Length: 480
Image (cartoon, rainbow, N blue to C red; front, side):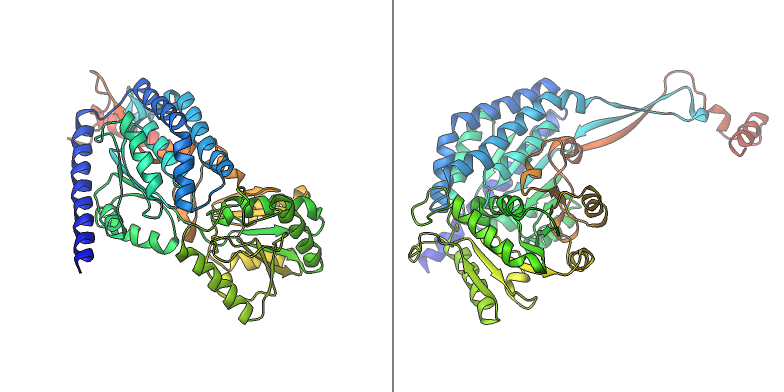
């Protein structure tokens, strides 16, 4: 009882602090509503130096939160893309900020029209646990490029990372510019109810629905980066080693705890056994051992571990073949390590084919022709990513034209997310809106149309009283 009271008091304190931060950021934005390009670049460069200064502390903190997280994966998937995103935005923000000239109709001359890009104000960023640095820094880069202030709600599953990030950002920005918010689910719910000028959420589809409902009360626009079951399609003639190598990489990174990880494979029926062998070989080559392999990340916490184990139990009980890739035949009990696991003979009534997997389990489904594979995908909620493996250019184009997904790779996996010059975002059940690159700048800016006239008023002929000869000429001209 005493512990419960202390817990609630702590959460209420966090919520009270969060509300104060929000009001402070709103007040600060009103005083400086249009940071210059130079100011924005300075903010981005300060962020870059902060990440570089604290990179080892961040790597250590993420490793501590996961229990074991590959340090190289943290460098490759979090530190490097964060720094590259800063570099990309810093080089381009001046161009993005330039007003866009637009045409003025003949009847409204002399005048000018332009679109200016203003900061929205205070942006809320809700960060998931799987990439706690990149999925905080990436949206923050977008918010700062557009001239906004930002509040970042970190996941309760990554408290050490939140602590280091709060220290990093606190050394660079006053809290009325950028602030980190921590706390449990109650704080997250209260955060999503704040009247932000934009709210970006990355996480599960089920939670995204709640976030969008909360934002609707304030008419807060949202960017939702959700997930879903991202398919990988194997063509009839692609070399299987090529496909298996790239799929194994995409599924192995972060032990599959990636929103754009290949969730399942659609493979020509006659090639399934060969693909299974190729994948087994590739996983074994990348991860020759598991228990003491610093390259292989473990599942973040007991809850997620039990969820994945329940998927395996459910699939096995319903007739699936479970094929773990454990080359050294190690005993993994007492850990949260789950071997990369291939699942064959899966059916739609298994949990592993109903929910986003978010772990190192990889079902392989047969298809008899490409039409059937495309129908299977089209009948289901639109995924965040889609992967096609095949070198036929016409078939590649068909996949690009006839499938819907947040993003797509041809003959690769995951790496479209790291392309700063492309928008990133979901569609339907996998999300809405975009960030990254220029599209992200536009998402977090108000594109305001401005019509400009000076002393001479060329519109006087259309003022009342109506019926003059000049107005009739105007009618005739535009009704021609």
